[in-house]
Image (tube, rainbow, N blue to C red; front, side, top):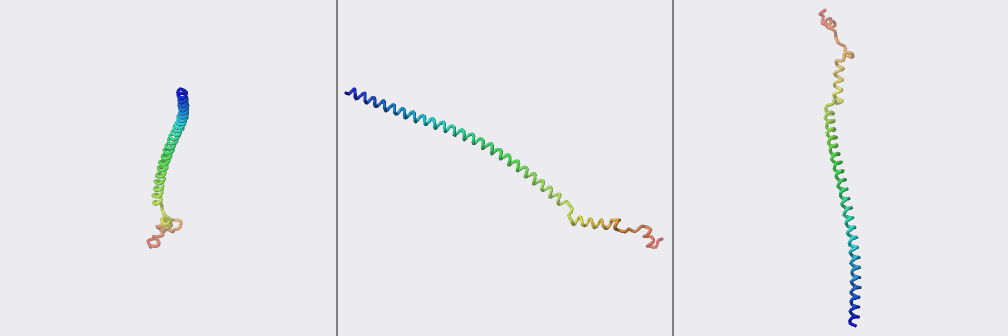
Length: 123
């Protein structure tokens, strides 16, 4: 009977050991699966960060180009204003017109030398 009881105890121990081994294998498989998922997520995150860095670099480059273009436009506008300040105003043009009208031979009558001499009584 002691042998029978020992055999039963051994069977029970083997059964429990097998059950624990199965459970341990299941846990190990789940752990392997989780590690695989985690590695996959890490790889995707790494790729995502790499793509974001590339996009950020491209955006920074575009912003730098836009900044340079804005500086060029600003300089151009300043040059235009400088030239605009040097141009004649409407008032300046009117003054020039009136001066030209004063010395215009078509609209004015000039005295010849003979006419002047006659008026002065020199001839």
